[in-house]
Image 1 (cartoon, rainbow, N blue to C red):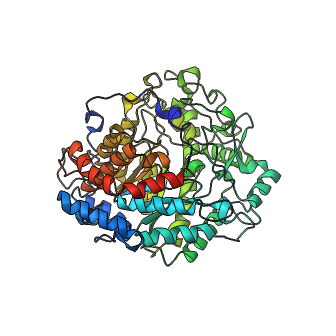
Image 2 (cartoon, rainbow, N blue to C red):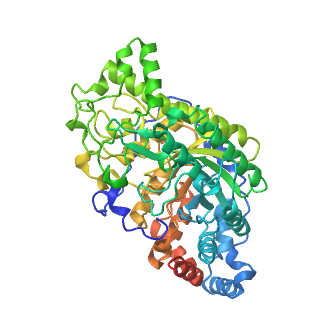
Length: 573
C-alpha cells in the first residue's frame, strides 16, 4: 500500500460517495447505565504517553531549511497569520487529547515497507522529507509496523533492529511521537497489502513440518498469516511457545529502545492476529478465497484447536459436539440466508449448540488476547508507554440477526448479544486501549443489500468501551482523502454518546490516519489533510465551520509547498 493504492479502494468501499447533509442519528443511542468515564480519566491514559504540552520546534523552521523558514515567517507577517510553530502551540496547549473537548491527536501510518528486507530505511530521503511535511501539518506522530519477519528472521532469539533504530531516531529528531506495532503476522494477503513480508524463516520451517500450526478451515485450507492460537501454549517453535516468542520479541524491543520509551515511543500496539488484529483469519483475500461481502468461514480445524473443542464439549456434557465445528455454515462468499447455520429463522447460531460453539470459539480468542496482554503489560510496565489492541471493523451483514461475518472472525456479536463488551472488559483488565477501524465510513456509502452499517457498529463499540471504562482510539479502514470522510471521522471521534447525561464530554484518545503515500501529498489532498488535522486538534468544542479551517490551512499549504513537493517527488522515485 506504500506506493500503489488503486487496488484498495474498491474492495470495501461499496457505493460511490454521495454528497449530502450530515446527520447525527446514528450516534443518538443512549449510553448504558454504567458510570460515565470522564475525559480526564480517559485521556490521562493517552497523555501518559509523554505528550509534551509545549510543542517542539517545527522541523521546517530549523537549520536544515533556512530558506523555507524565512519564507514561512515572511508570509505569515505579510498576511497577518500565525506561523506553523505558533499554530501548533495554540492547539497543543488547547489540549490535544485532553479533557473537555480539547481535541484528538492524529498519528499517520507509515508505509508497510518503511524498513526493507535488508533492515535499512526504505527510500531514506523520501522518508525524511515526508516526516518533515507531516510534522509541519501538526500531526502528533506516526505509526510504524515492527515486523517479526524482518527483525527475527534469521534465527530464534537473534534480533536485527537496524532500520528501526534509524527510523525511530529520525522521528525523535523531528519531535514526532511513535506508535510501534508489534507485527507478529505476515504482510500480504489482506486488504491494502502491497508488499509481502513473511513470518521468520525458522517459523515457516516449523509450520512446514507441522501444518496444524496454521489456521485451518473445514475444507483443510491452511492460512499461514499468523500462528494458530490453538498452539499458543505449546513449545512448537524451536522449544518455545508462540506466546513466549512474542514476549521475548517485545522484551528485546523494550531493551533496545528503552531510551525512547515514554518520550518518543508512546504506544505499543500488540499484534494478535491477521493484519495485526485480534481476530481469526476468516476472510482471507489471497488467491480470491474471500470477496466482500462474503460471510467468511470458521478457522478452528487445526488439530490443536479441535483438541480444545473436544475438551470443552466433554466438560459441557455433550461430547458429540466436540469432533468438528458447524458443518452447515456455508462457504466464504455465501450470505447468511444461503446457510442453515446463519439464517435468521431457525438458524443454528440461535440454538443451544450454536451458543456452545460460538462461546467456545470467541472465548479462545479472548484467552489468546489475555495471554499476550499479560506479557505485554509486564514487559512495558513503568516505561511510560500505553498498550493498545486493534479490533477489526466488520460492518457487512451487521443489520442481520446473526452477524455472520463477525461470528466467523471470533466476535460473538448478534442481535441478542453484545460481542464487544467482553473484549473491552478484557482490555480494561490490562489498562489497554481499544483501537477500532472503519471510523471513516457511513452506512449509506456501503452496499445496503448486504445490510452494512459501519456507523452503527462504531456506535456499539463506543458504548462498550464506555461501559468498560476503556479508552477508544480509531483508524480509517481504507485510504480516503475527501472532506466527506474527514467530516465523518471528526463526528465519530467526538463520541457524541453522552449528550443527555451530566458530566464532561468524552472523545477518542487518538486517531491514526491510513496511510502516508504519494497521493496524500498531492496538492488538493494535502490541503484537505492539513485542515482535517487542525480541526481534530481543536476538538468538539470548536464551532468554526469547515470552510473557515480549510481557508486557514491554505496558508500553511502555500508556505510548505516546497517541502511537500519534495516529499511527493521522493516517494514516487
